[in-house]
Amino acid sequence: MRKALVAGNWKMNGTINDVRELASKISQTEQDKVDIMVAPSFVYLHSVSETLSKTNIFLAGQDCSEFDQGAFTGETCADMLVDLGCTHVIVGHSERRQFFGDSDSRVAAKARKAEIKGLCPIVCVGETLEERDRGRTIEVIERQLCAVFKVIENKFVIAYEPVWAIGTGKSATPEMAQEVHENIRQCAAVHSHVDGLDLRILYGGSVKPDNADELFSMPDIDGGLIGGASLDSESFLKICRSAAELVN
Ligand code: PGA
Image 1 (tube, rainbow, N blue to C red):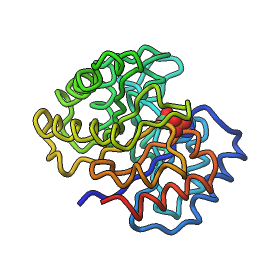
Image 2 (spheres, rainbow, N blue to C red):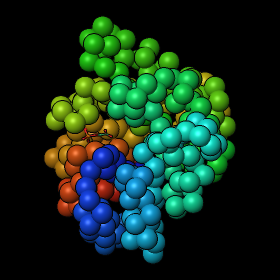
Image 3 (cartoon, rainbow, N blue to C red):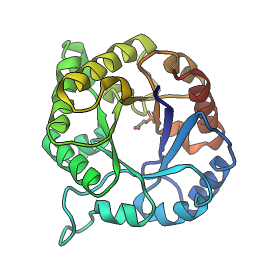
Image 4 (cartoon, rainbow, N blue to C red):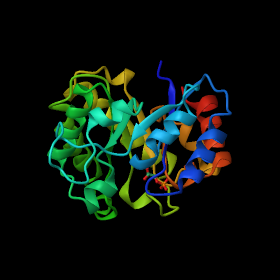
């Protein structure tokens, strides 16, 4: 039985007051059927960690370095995230792959470093519109997954995020997402050490309160990685309630 997970990826948004207020509103919910997580910007992790200290909401970094520590200006290592109370870290988000050169092998190195340091990696995979149009979706996703499966040894979460659906308002249809999620589960069963049936696979890409129900009703969608809609506490909590009711 997989417990639902809904993670808010706040990206590079907000002021310190905004994120404190958002965290505090989110923390007022009581949900035992869904794990809730937020990933604020690095500079606000400490503050959000304090706001969430007496709650069971998980804290995640939006990325981490593949290196331990040292002369890597601008980077944040996994130990620092642990220090600030993070339990999870997002790696391989398509914005990192697209704008900051995160290759499959770097994403794998980041996921491995995260797990060595005690963080659970949330590994993002997804195809571009061009790749989908050429019928290469499954091939691309398997390539991204296998790079990580080769090195990872502990628990991880996968987030399927079609690049063309992120921040565009164009979500994948539930059937499209389900097809990819089913493939991810099979790929994990064959190529990773985890039992595919235990693996939590989140969908991300324009999830909103009005499409969450239909996405979360799909058998292989175990929750969501939410960008834009996670910046509004009401929308985010509605999505969390949908997951609590409909996942599994
Ligand atoms: P979105 O972003 O919900 O704004 O599409 C999702 C993500 O990038 O994780």
